[in-house]
Length: 205
Image 1 (cartoon, rainbow, N blue to C red):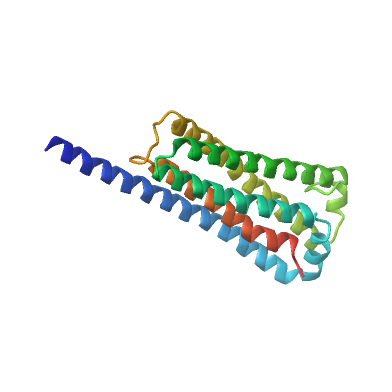
Image 2: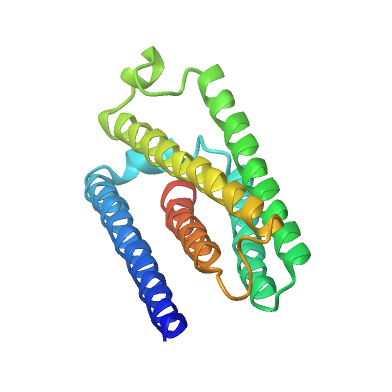
């Protein structure tokens, strides 16, 4: 009887944990949705300026980072599947690959930011301040939205590192893997946000 009660309690905890993650994801979507709305309004007002400013971005690095995140989203999903099959080693290795891909994304973004800063293209610089208002707005939105996304990448890496440790120690297994599933959901959110950011910022036509 006590085992049955314990099982029901764990089931309720799992549902509560998943529900909490979905609520968190919803709030994050509201946050970035608001930013996308602000972007859309300003882009409509300063279409030509946004196009000129966007031409200064490195489309190759943006495309490369898109591919990196898509692959990392796949590896974290494969990690969940592996743990469901009780393959701890494969799940752990796939999480490590995901973390390496996340690091590669941040390294690429570092070089992209460095190039912009080297050319005085950043909010508050003399160059950007003296640009047309629409271009100044574009670079402000670009740095704010991509930096906020980068912060989410770092948070995701910390979360996945903790999860990878628990997988290695057997604390996450085929019977109890809600934390890994939630970590995967968070990482898919990070990927989804970038899927919207990439065309909005890099592929303006």
